[in-house]
Amino acid sequence: MAPVDDLIRHPIAHARIERGWSQPELARRVRRAALRRGFRSGVDRQRIWNWENNRATPDDDSQMLLADVFEIDQSLATTLGWPHWLPGRDSSIPLGPNSTVPALREALRTSMDRRTFLTYSSAALVGLAHQWASTEPQTLAAALDGKPVDAELVDLLEATGQKLTGLITEQRQHTRTLLDAHLTTVTDLIEGGNYTQPVGQRLHTLAARMSSTVGWHRFDQGKHAAASRFWHGALHSAHASGDRDLGAGIMSDLAYQATWLKDPKTAAQILDSAVLRTEHPTARSLLHLRLARAQAALGEAYTCRRSLATAEQELARTAGEPPAWCSWMSPADLLVDSGQCLLDLGEPERARELIEEGTALLPGARDKTRAVFLSYEAGSLLRAGDADQAAAAAMQSLTLAKKIGAPRCVALVRDLTPGFKRYAGADGVNDLLERVRAS
Image (cartoon, rainbow, N blue to C red; front, side):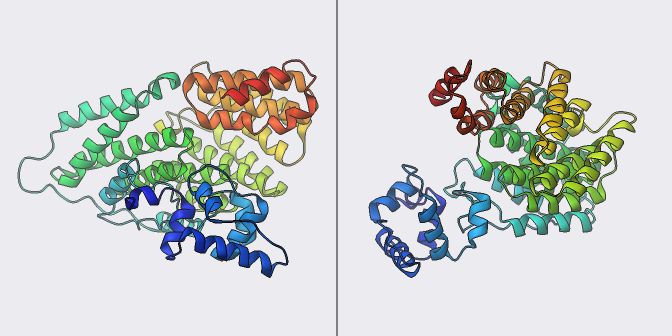
């Protein structure tokens, strides 16, 4: 008999096994669901096996029937897409005085845990956001008996962490093991509790920054469940340290992911809570900008424009050094994301102008962001019918994404290929399509 870890390798397998169904039994239930809808389905055990082993993706009709079988709302399945709508999502760990270490340990286990495909439900994320906004951080416990963690050791850990998280984008793809090990060390020290309160605050802040960075690495690799767990652990750490702006930034990362996974409603709800406790103007600008992206995806033109105006105002009044986690926020980001909002709202001409202007302003060191922006530029050009320019921008985006090891950015270009197929004769389009197929 195969080990349990081998059996539970996909959310559909998890949902099936939780209900005590075999693969043939799930196939039978799908066929019965089809009959109730007045047609026949050819789903059998082999097809279930293919889905569970990522050998095939169920078509729209099969997903509709699976949603019937698992009693999932059809609109959720359509919004989130396969396999994100499947049941079996984990609940988040509630914030509390002793919640940091369990949350970080959960994140660090995701690379080995058979349930790494499980993402947090929308309800869990929104509930966590409300709890974060309404709960005051607990005072860190005093040092336990024995010699506390030395401040000089924390100096070294902070310097190492800053070095690892500050590497240029192209180098970060090679540091996953180092980042995980460094975060494990910091988590071990927090769990020991052998520190003074000031040192404890520094350790929790460092853990929050490291876990947030690791979360972005996983997100760029398309590992959404792992990313959400690292951001979840980072939020617990930031909350324990009392750094409200850092916590708000982490909440906005979870919201950004929700928008990316085509769940802008959840993103907007998270950001509504996060912005309540955010203080620095740069941080507030970033949160309002991400809120605008969610509102644009929802088609809420008025609230989107209001959020964009607020983001612009907050960025303009920024004084002094912004928090490290949002120090990169710049007029370039505001312009490009504003353009993307207008693209979603059906204004491609103005959107293209803003995206091109913002991309030109982007500093050379931000290759990952440039790859994302170039894909947005390609999308806006494609929408305007400028296929050859769109292909050039998409090719630049794809080249950068491959160079820095960011599958998420590759996926952005791949999502544009149906639009490019209509312009197969335009300059550069066939070369782009061939390059995407090889990626």
